[in-house]
Length: 138
Image 1 (cartoon, rainbow, N blue to C red):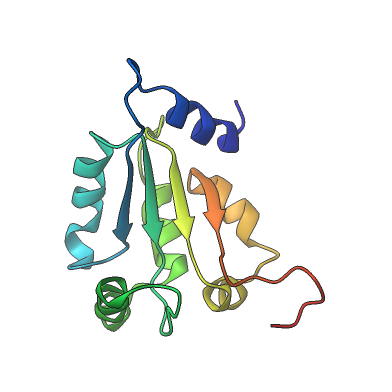
Image 2: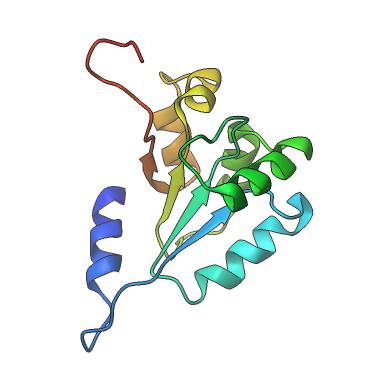
């Protein structure tokens, strides 16, 4: 099964007409040292876990996620650090993990090397809401 297919399968899997639970965590919030433990606890009950990549200007997010992002950035959380931590998780990784990032962290990491890094970290999907594919401009 392809990683992206694992997302669809996880969302369809809850039985008895129950809705799927997609949980969201900002990576490194409130404490980078406890993030992986928090991810493990949330993963026990969620069908999919979305991990927010902290960004200095999360303009599409509300005040709670903006505040969490600022705190995580101040603690040194980066996309590279998140991927390193996720790569250390034992396989199989359930539920599927999806990263939500803005364009700037993706470009700072290197869009050309990101797909391989995502695969290596066991990430099943990536959301980049401010990415334009039309002409490369904003």
